[in-house]
Length: 231
Image (cartoon, rainbow, N blue to C red; front, top):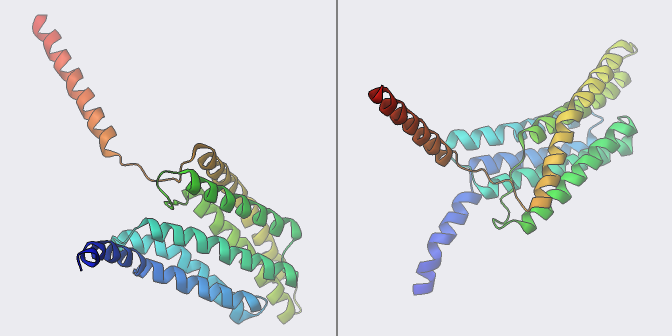
C-alpha cells in the first residue's frame, strides 16, 4: 500500500503530461496525414494532409496558451513530425508528384535531424527533453507548403486542360522549397551541434541572467554615487 501511494504522484504527473489537449491535436493531425497521404493525389487526400500539417502548427500554440507544455509533448511533436513527413515523401515519390531533388533533399535533412536528435537525447543528462528549434519549425512548414503545392499542381493538371494554374502551383512549390533551405540547414546544424555537445535543447531560464544584469546596474549606480560625492 505504501509503495502504491508513493508511486501515485509520479503516475499522476505522467498522466498529466500525456493526456493533454496539445498532444491530442498532435495525434489527430498525424492520423489525418497518415490516412490522407495514401491518396494525396486526390482532393480529399490532399485536404487531409493539409489539415493534419496545420494541426502541427497549432499544437505548440495551444500548449503555451493552456499551460500544458511538457517534455513529453515536445518529444511527441518532434517524433510525429518526422514520421508523417517520411510518409508524405514516400507516397509522393511513389506517385511521382514532386521533383526527385526536392523530395531527396527534404528526406536527407529530416533523416539527419532525427539521428542527431536521438544521439543528443542519449548523451544528454536530461533524457528525452527534445526541443525542436524555431528554424526547424519554419523550415518544416515551408517544406510542407512546397509539397502541398506540388501535389496540388498534379491534381489541377488532371482536372483541367489549362496548364497555367498547374505551372503557377509548381512555381510556388519551387519557391517554397527554396525558401525552406536556409532555415532547414540552420536547424540541421543546430541538431548536429546538440548531438556533439550532448545537449537535448532544454530551454534555460532567463531569470538568473536578468538578476545578474540588475546587480551589475545597481553596482554601477552605487559607484557613480560615491564618485559624485567625492567630487
